[in-house]
Image (tube, rainbow, N blue to C red; front, side, top):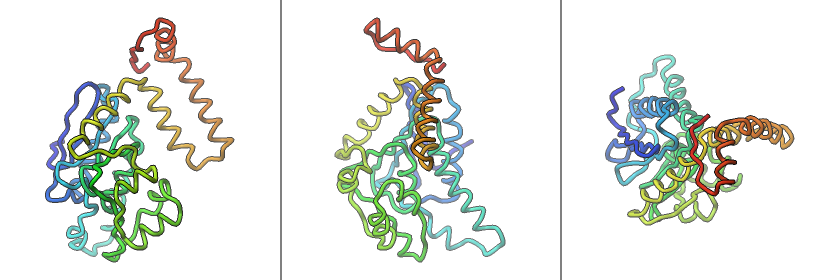
Length: 257
């Protein structure tokens, strides 16, 4: 697929996906379709073990393209098709077997904030902010994404007021994992991605699967699932290699089997 609004760079098992739809990386139908295609591709690439998602403008993403939505025709099924695409982009990131790091190079608003929250970790520019401003344009959405990261009252405050929240506050709340000056943002994101890429890809995938699957399970069922995954991992070549490396006092070389 030819990408109009995305660029991809792969080096040392790390893929960097950069959104570039000036001025603010608004999520149009076209950009969403590209993101869906990109993450489906990266999920299957054996030369990719970690992904960094960022924006090339001074905005990570301003969210849904409101002008495009306003121009939607009232034909039957139009909104259902758009909503299906919106959902699947978030799921493509969440379900990607590779860890995804959001590098917030600028504001993440509405669906752009939800996209960042769909990633496994967030590193942010210390001078930027996030918000869920849908209420200010007569729309709603994002409750489930915020519930995964915020207390019920904080989620309500953000969704019902549309207020901005700084990345410094998000870091204090544990939603953002690292806060960096703008010049240090991408080096920090790439260093974290390189650390993840050096781990056993099978273990990384199963750990990510565990987070997604046990979220709505009971403690008993969730832990039982994790134990089963650990048993399966213990039989892999990577697990045997890790044991040999520990005994031999060297770094393990993982092959994903």
